[in-house]
Image (tube, rainbow, N blue to C red):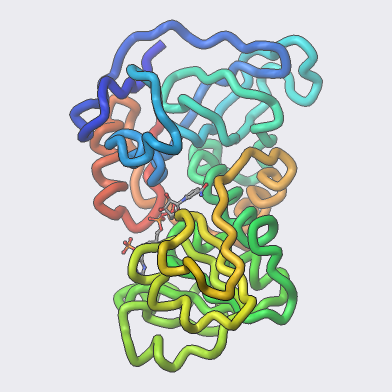
Length: 301
Ligand SMILES: NC(=O)c1ccc[n+]([C@@H]2O[C@H](COP(=O)([O-])OP(=O)(O)OC[C@H]3O[C@@H](n4cnc5c(N)ncnc54)[C@H](OP(=O)(O)O)[C@@H]3O)[C@@H](O)[C@H]2O)c1
């Protein structure tokens, strides 16, 4: 099969299309004929070596976490899926024509969800959900600021925080304020506007998908004993502060993935897709996503 292989840590020139042996499904796994994959920030953090302390790679390696496609074969003990089923999932090595994955990483494609577009969803849906529901355990009535709110994870966090009955402030760049109006948040704040930051109310919680100096400026607005949930690691600025910091890594969750993908299919939640590339153009796809595509970048087979 064809796959995109990372030869060595570095730039996108280290990504190469190669003919490699197809994977075989083990017990409890299925083999998927990939329809599409997508690009996530973790892919370029892995490619460059920035993430090698937390996720070391044995190179050469195939990257890619999101997949959508059709089940080709099922391994021993698999009853949840059969050949021909359409699925989406949070897997490893999805920048390839075939992927072997554990069944608990997969959900059935909901009705009315495009098979290719489904590949934009697994990592961002699960990260947004696990940020709000598991890491932060956000409660009804709390005031929460979501940073990077028009980003893919941020949108999911805003959606779920609203569903829970929280008062949600969408934190975005000044230039993204018009775009943020569609999110359904209670208010929008420009995180790069000092006057708007100064006018923030006291926050019960922050759901952070941005990090860096931005979170440093927001921590003083978090109440004593408040919760900072982070998808981007524990910020140094939180050290020694009387707040609860909950940094986490997303994990597969078949049931929640299926439920949230159904919300996208019903158009209750929108994850914009910026551009599609073919597998052979994966380096260009990653380059665009890393530069900032303004939405998900898909890789189709
Ligand atoms: N912990 C985990 O398991 C996990 C899982 C998935 C993702 N993540 C991390 O979560 C982060 C977000 O991922 P994503 O897929 O949502 O990326 P994304 O779609 O690119 O969203 C990031 C958003 O944050 C905005 N942003 C960046 N810097 C900002 C700043 N200084 N002020 C205001 N807004 C800013 C971006 O705007 P621009 O486009 O204008 O820069 C964009 O709208 C990434 O760092 C990713 O690695 C972690």
